Image (cartoon, rainbow, N blue to C red):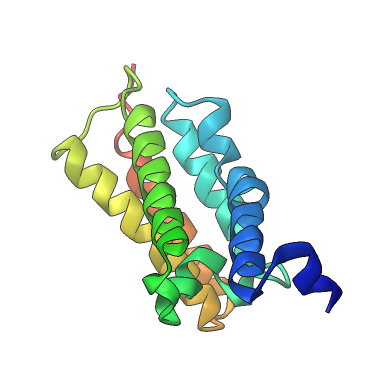
Length: 154
């Protein structure tokens, strides 16, 4: 009863929880990309950070925003907006990192951004599927190896 007095109804409580998740958890996860946004190395740091988070005891739960969409709650406008916001946020951060002057891509920048977005989602999905940690480690290493090929050798 006190929850309803504080929040109104379950949907408002859910929206507040989702907003908190975006502000607190997602912002920490994206910190490597935010802290040094024009450095290609930030992408590696992000995937290392993501890998560590996904192997923690909470990693098996996946992403609250992604899970909300998967569970059919996407009819809620706030849930839809949170998913769009997260995608746009990651897209912009990856794009900015790829503006690193030392970055030389073998394909279009758009292809690189889409590859990074897909890889991040794949790792979250693997963690939720309870993939062994060594699988997550190999995925992280693979993306780091790929990103290393984008670094110009001076």
